[in-house]
Amino acid sequence: MTQADDLLVTHDVTVCYGSHQALNPTSLAFSEGGVTALIGPSGCGKSTFLRCINLMNREIPGCRVGGEILYHGNDVNSRSQDLFQLRKSIGMVFQQPNPFHKSIRENIVFAPRRHGVSDKDELDALVEDSLKAAAIWDEVKDQLDQSAFALSGGQQQRLCIARTLAMRPDVVLMDEPCSALDPISTFAIEQTIRDMAERGICVVIVTHNMEQAARVSDRTAYFLLGDMVETGPTKELFSRPRTSGSTTTSRGGSDDGREQDGGRAPRPVLRRLPCPEGRLARAWRRTRVTALIGPSGCGKSTLLRCLNRMNDRVEGMPPHGLGPARRRGRARGL
Ligand SMILES: Nc1ncnc2c1ncn2[C@@H]1O[C@H](COP(=O)(O)OP(=O)(O)OP(=O)(O)O)[C@@H](O)[C@H]1O
Ligand SMILES: [Mg+2]
Image 1 (cartoon, rainbow, N blue to C red):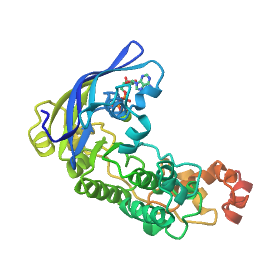
Image 2 (tube, rainbow, N blue to C red):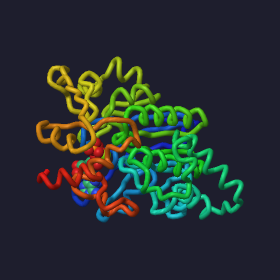
Image 3 (cartoon, helix red, strand yellow):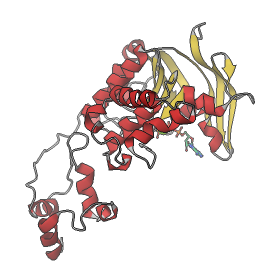
């Protein structure tokens, strides 16, 4: 149900990709300072709906959007809508971090500069405030002029959130922003989401993590096979769902939305691999599935990239990234 103070309202929004109707008429309303979670199984149209709001679907050939999307009462699809201004006010954070090929500082100031901010002190303050709001300032404050690609995946994602916040948006759309993050970074982002809401920003977040939806959102909308089948206050929807299956994943506890066998998740076997000096490679051969875990920025991806020599392509990495142990491993054909 829409109300007078709703910032963003969708009326019967539909989306077709060619002849395939991916989203059936969907009407939802979003208010200032509210957090809405979009949930539902893979392929049900959550990202499709989210992308309509800041006209990202326009960039997909053959994609047609119907219905009305009102932002401050104006239809975003009208010809008079300035896309540049719209995306300043309605920012988006994607599932995969997509920093610019620039320094950390430049990632933050690039868009504000294009929107006319030129004062150095103002830009410096923007860099600090945005990075603090995205819970990454302490990790990067001494390396602001280094490439954003020198950051870990989780750090890059928080940088992208900072970049979005630097535009001081009214609405932030987030498409599974934590799917590649460790629990500590996830917690930091969830805190950031709540802080954004307190500052009056309207947040719409797609998530497969039911616990996350329950923790951060005020309202939830459940999508199924292209239909928005149920919406309401999150507490109500989770405690008394009208649609069977809408909160299934909260019982299974699975992060990817798949129900687990009778709710009994396999017990993880945690084994600390001896490291370094080649023993790591031997342990790898004996272990069928090895999980590398640890907080954001601790080196998991760096180690993984060593295995097929992806790090050789990273500027500044020594040619034998793992040193003598790696060379011995190679000599043994590992
Ligand atoms: N660019 C595209 N071109 C054609 N069809 C698309 C495109 N993007 C999505 N679709 C189709 O639209 C439907 C909804 O996809 P969408 O990505 O919105 O689902 P989703 O709910 O976000 O799924 P997931 O949870 O896996 O991200 C699917 O059938 C998908 O195949
Ligand atoms: Mg999606």
